[in-house]
Length: 440
Image (tube, rainbow, N blue to C red; front, top):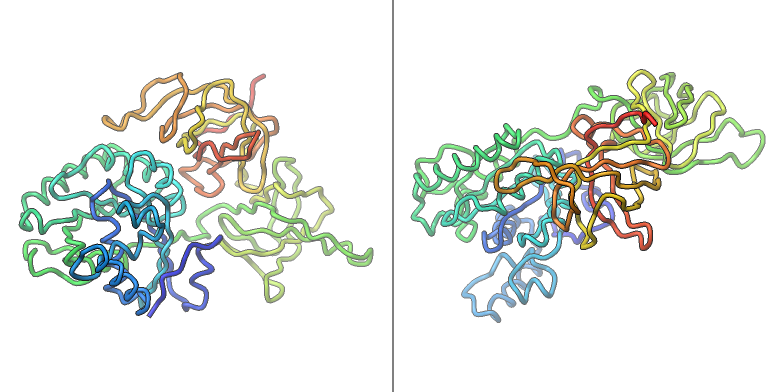
């Protein structure tokens, strides 16, 4: 039986010792009262991922609130304010395992004002589980969550049509909602969508197949989570390694032992591979790779290692080691799509910090050029300030060149943050669209 763990700095730490399972990161999203917390609670309960004392505490809390049995939503609504209001207002990470896979579940809020939290939860997800109430179908918040997931590069969407028991498990209701959502997914360019008819309250098609939907021959939710493809093949991606820390030699006789520590963001690197240091552009060769247990012949994403280079080149924290023949071109200009996560307006002329990987540089917002319409799901020309939860495109002029990849190609090195210069708060999450050399 797997315990429900609280969030840690690195969610993977909670799964250490769980065995050589595949790992799937997925995020939930849905409008308020769509039953998202109940669905997550049901999934955890029915996969026997809840400790007995935790379930007993939920049963006591449920009785105090007048319920006949355990309110499974309380398994996920952990904050006091959430328990009192019956809503989810923060991202909570849940961890559980089955014999096939381990899971990191980001349970995100439903209120429109907390869309920024949904962006946080989905930023590392491979699958987004979008809930709709069978009585209401696809609403604007459904479109908003689907658009955010698509923008963030989430490859798989699962549509959970919940509360089917309240519409008599009507196949026509389910089909109409599925067709409506499919049209949304097509507009967003997402082609991997699976729709599931569920009743989270009763457990229909969550872990166990429901006898109330004989017309449905697709997978249960758990079956889909077990089967969806996970991970990328590092061998198919160019090598990227943001330097987090320089390990300097302690004595003169070990001057050739300077190492550069970090986590491989993309691709594979081997001893003898030619690499380039960005943004300086200096070329060199990998002389050695050191892992936790000693020397390695190769390293691949997402391993944490230390790399030693053949030549004595200048490398600092914030630099990027990249495959020599497939390196990004450093540029002082950056175009990106951003989701505003701060109450502060974001407008042309603003001065911000851009945090890319382990590097932070000063920048100026040159222009806001478009904003996503969450009704039509189309971007239209726009030049005013972006406000919290807006998704728009802007152009930045950087004080120092950055080697940023297109987010659509390399998710981790194509992502960036906009940070307030004064207080260090995050203003927006960004996805690089185009980088170009300055003509000035």
